[in-house]
Image (cartoon, rainbow, N blue to C red):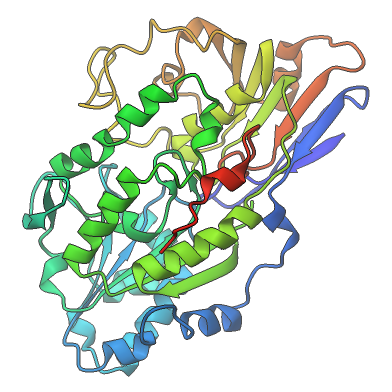
Length: 428
């Protein structure tokens, strides 16, 4: 069986082909949204012009003297370039002076982007003609209030200098938020490190309580509300005027778009996300192959999906061709073998892989030691440059060997839990 995996997001979008023996019992896991055609430019415009809970963007922009457009970073597969050009066109037509329009990457506590990244996200023309900056979580901050949970909300001071604030992002499954998108463009997108730490610590009691549950049970689970609702409160303090959120297929193409009030459009989008990101649960298998493309520089999230869907003593294969490696993460990352951040803990190198897994094989031409020890003891992690090497490592397997292949592990929501329990009846 030959299977094509979408890969190389931000680096040419070249798919990767893998071959599995026909004698194996292989389950190919796809999200339901892959059956839809991507939206055309005309359809994208029409959805932006039909906002939820808000005036249309061109009306919001009239009389405004300046605008700040926030966009997500390379840890998201969002094709913001098309969205940015449509929004920019509307702002200029509404009379906002071009010299008073700015773009800021809402990267949260991730490492800063450079020009090549900005061009991929926005286009060379915008980067040449408009100011484009990274958010700085360590400085240039201003406090906009105190949340109901007692946290001081410090945000990017530059953003607060503009009277129209617009966010561009995507709704995708997320382990803390249920789904990303919505107010996350503000918190942690443009908040200071301490504010982001306070917010993420809201997740820790739930994580400890549910530590024996499958990891992917948290994806799409809106019952875990503290982190998300805290972010929504800060977004209101900031005054985020208009948000555009897209839903993506496994090729990171736009299949649905929601726009308007940041909270209203988000929850309407979430209702659709439950359907389009659904994938039938394949159960556990002897081998689980997980493809990480939409969030390739945070591929440990894909690995966790593999852990949930492999038999005890089985092998997980992580496919990840991200040439930039692991994202630099000031909130949850490691900054030395023995030194992490406030939320990441210490030495990862001496920790074993989860007990159920015999071995992790990373299929990638871009080997990185730092990537290896994200998962545990490097003796249990093997690297392969070619698919033939992967098959050699897996060794001779009898007929009937079971294998799960996740076409896109991050956006394919499936667990043994009933997802209907994840959607509260009192959504906004």
